[in-house]
Image (cartoon, rainbow, N blue to C red; front, side):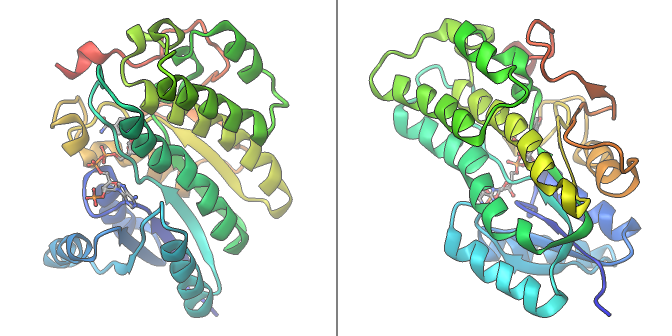
Length: 287
Ligand SMILES: NC(=O)c1ccc[n+]([C@@H]2O[C@H](COP(=O)([O-])OP(=O)(O)OC[C@H]3O[C@@H](n4cnc5c(N)ncnc54)[C@H](OP(=O)(O)O)[C@@H]3O)[C@@H](O)[C@H]2O)c1
């Protein structure tokens, strides 16, 4: 009989590290701390060991199919799969006033395209009744999009995966050919690549839920709050420990009926489609 297994991506620091720490205190099973860089991951494991906590460890770069495949094989062979997957790894690139195409590509590759590889390789080994949490952002709420054409397409509840890719591609093309219009994105187009990637992730979460319904697996996306981590240069109203509460709630405590939702850092479920709402990220909050 296999023990239950939880995996947290990008968990050598920040919110991911706090999720691993607090899962180890509550979850009746094994918890994997994963990192793209082995040395940073092992330092994080040593830090938890000092607290008397014993995570499992595996290297995992979410943008590297080879790395995901090795981890997939390890999970399959050692544990028969996994029960909880918290997709936390992410990067931001400041407010990006002068972001180049390459800067945007880096952000979009990690915050959106990596999810396609993760679903392709890890979702098939998530066990029945499993739970998946996609850590998005307030930048992922639909109110971050101001372009009328894309609001119309993204509010279609039957949107396809291909249309979401098209949305991301539309933005990347605009960066490549110099036609990016700041008015298409909230807050004067700040952090545009991050917003586009996180909006796409929230839209994708709903499709993932439909596809995993038959295996009784729940998938939700969530905004962890403005959190004191390296990403925000320690600006924020929540510590990583405080911010780990809602991901833990979604992974362990939420009613099984909570599916395909967009959840705020206080645990409330928001209407992701409400594009006129005031949930979008305001870059002035970072200063
Ligand atoms: N902090 C906030 O206020 C806030 C607000 C909204 C949403 N979020 C989201 O919350 C999540 C965690 O953010 P954080 O604030 O904890 O940021 P953080 O302190 O910068 O930590 C990000 C983690 O992701 C890892 N990572 C980056 N690229 C990776 C890759 N290719 N493969 C594997 N791991 C990778 C980083 O590893 P390295 O150490 O190797 O770089 C690090 O462990 C992100 O998805 C972020 O977008 C944060």
